[in-house]
Image (cartoon, rainbow, N blue to C red; front, side, top):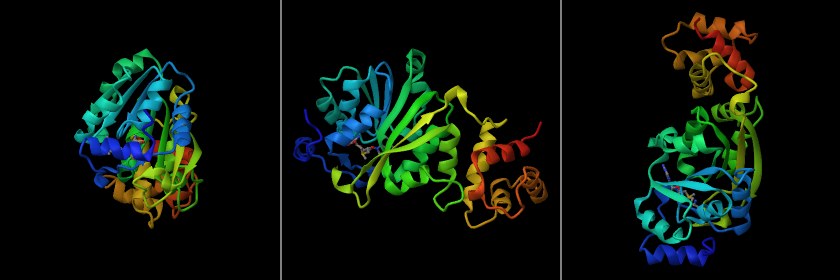
Length: 286
Ligand code: SAM
């Protein structure tokens, strides 16, 4: 079944009396080379589980099922579940779960898979919640081997940005803390049905796992520092931290910033992952 053909997508949707739901970011991929590229990149080993977020009508799911031992595919839109039953009928290694990824306990969902071998994430993400989904994956301590996702081109630029630029943000620091990030494929808007307004790109974060080069003493605090630093972009780091840590006095925050060798008027976008880790340590008691 060549689900990537535009006529096939339209036929399948019509067969089930469905239309594309913009509020769920439903832009289905219609380029077989991009599909093969993203599916091939998901994992270097076939003996793995792939978590797909947003299965749509199963276009990418089928590609993943053909390459990897097992696929767990989440889809929020209940109306698409019977469609997936139809399009994935010949893929016994796929489990479809009707759920919102942001409300799902991924550790519980994949517990048996984590014990069985590597688990990779691969998705053509719904663009309206790209950032919360990626932050959820990066902040979780779940041992994913890699996260390979289609995102808006501007978001890919943010993920791969260098420190100091205007694209550098909490998502850049979080991704660089967890692993190495690479842009794999550029994808023009007309490769989707319906076509979104902007071009896209496939990016991959290969996670360090246990071998993280930078280890803050308190990871939850590290992420809180990073989020706070970019929560108030036009402010200095100290003022942004004041908003993010209302329980700490400003002189304590200023002292923490200067204790790691940074000027008191520095802005968050200037800090590397290592400097964020040292700042987080300076704000961690004990
Ligand atoms: N994987 C398909 C493809 O590549 O053609 C569809 C990708 S489409 C960009 C994103 C999909 O994510 C849609 O099917 C949408 O219904 C689903 N989705 C949106 N929000 C979601 C959420 N919070 N949890 C799970 N799936 C979601």
